Each structure stands twice: as structure tokens, then as C-alpha cells.
Picture (cartoon, rainbow, N blue to C red):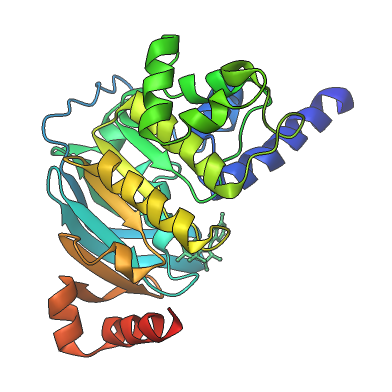
Length: 293
Ligand code: ATP
């Protein structure tokens, strides 16, 4: 019993950490099926994606009942549009992303994709429709090829390479002695933050889901790299339904709607220009970042 308990407990800790950082989630769900906090409803249907519009409708959520985190959040990401969420640390931005991926079930309200409540569809079909480019990509201790192909198991070498080219990581990979067979991860070649993020982008390109969640890096990239990666993310997000958790406001100016979140409430919302004209919290954040840059 003890022998069984310790590894499961250990995996549980890893699972929780990984869930927190939105990292390598699909793999964890496979490994730790039993740890799921949400379950498919009896007779759950496959999610049918048409345009992939996303709706949060008066969503309330708490990790612990005594401490509500989201207080009735409503917004829509129309099919093929981008909504950006900004706000101070701890305001609930990543929580929105976790709920869209259905890591947790909400306490009230609903989240719908093309009109289908997330709780009424299978988790498998839901997660197939969503790609996440996380802040910090944890790579598997395996080859570069495996790490990219993980986006779509069974992808051919040609497809893996095409994705790597599009993510501007091909030349780097080709320059290593073993190329795509180079081992990466903790026990292999260490990649920089930017290189890891490019692997994550290549993975997402291969998966080609209709809905994307970008959890922008808060740090770790120099500004040239950051601009390049930003441009690649823009390209990946073209014509897709995108939720961006943004730390740099320069990346949200073209969003269909910007939500300013504070303590789990949307305190301002609108287009960049409207929000600047309003001269409120967003405008303050914008001025602060401009002077910082
Ligand atoms: P950041 O910009 O720092 O990433 P955020 O706006 O994304 O912050 P969230 O990660 O959504 O913030 O967290 C919102 C609140 O929920 C925080 O107060 C956080 O402490 C709390 N929280 C997050 N995850 C959990 C959890 N697993 N259990 C309990 N509370 C949590």
C-alpha cells in the first residue's frame, strides 16, 4: 500500500504543478487519468466545431469555496477573432484559460464553444480543439522530433520539419549533430526559453486546432527574440479563435476586445483606442509600459 501510495502521491504533486503552468497537459492527462477533477457526463457528445466561437457566460469560479476567484465573467470570442486579457498578477487571467481547457468545472454560469456547453462534450474532443502555447514549455526527455510531433502523433518527418520551419527552429535543429534525433529536455540538450517556445509553436502548428490559448511569457526572452516569437504567434493565430493572456500591451492593440481583469472582475473592456480614450486603468498600464520600454 505504501509503495503504491508514494508514487501516486508524487505524480499528483507533479500533475498539480503542471496543471498550474498549463504545460504539457495532454500527456499528463494520459498518464494521470485517475487524477482528473472533471469527468465526462454520461453519454457526452463529441464537440462539433464549426466556426469555434467561445462564450463565457456569467462564469463564477473558486478553487476553494471560501475564496471566489472569478465573479461573473462574461465575454465572447467570435469565430476567428482574438480576445486579450490583461491585469495584475493574481487577477484570474490564467484561471480563465484553465477553465476553457476544462481543468476545472465552474461553479455557475456556462462556457460554450459553438453553442455547446463544455460540460456536455467529451474532454477528448474539447482538448483536441484547443492548442496552448504556454509561458514555459517543458520538453519531454526525448528527441526534438518526438517533442514536435507530440502535437499530432503519427505526423510524418516531412510534416514535423515543415512545422519547425514555420516556427523558425528548423535551422537550429538541423545545425545540431543529430538533427531531429537530438535528445532534449532535462537529460539532453538544453534549449533556451525562446527555442523551447518555438518548439511549442511548431507543436501547435502541427496540431492545427481551431482555438488557441497563448499564455505570454512574462520574462526570459530578449526583446529581439520576443518580437520574432510574437510575429510567429500572430501567424499561427491567423483566422483562429484566440485567447491571449497578455503581459505586454503591444501584443493586444489589434485584439477584437481587451478585457482588463482585477480581482476576478472585468473592470474595463473594449478596443485599444477606446480604452486609451477612456483614460482609466488600461490607459495607465499603457503609459507605464511605454515609459518602461
Ligand atoms: P499571473 O499574471 O501572475 O499569472 P493570473 O492573473 O493569471 O496571475 P491566476 O493564476 O488566474 O492569476 O490566479 C488567480 C488567483 O487564484 C490567485 O489569487 C491565485 O493565488 C489563485 N489560485 C491559482 N491557482 C490556484 C489553485 N490551484 N488553488 C488555489 N488557488 C489558486
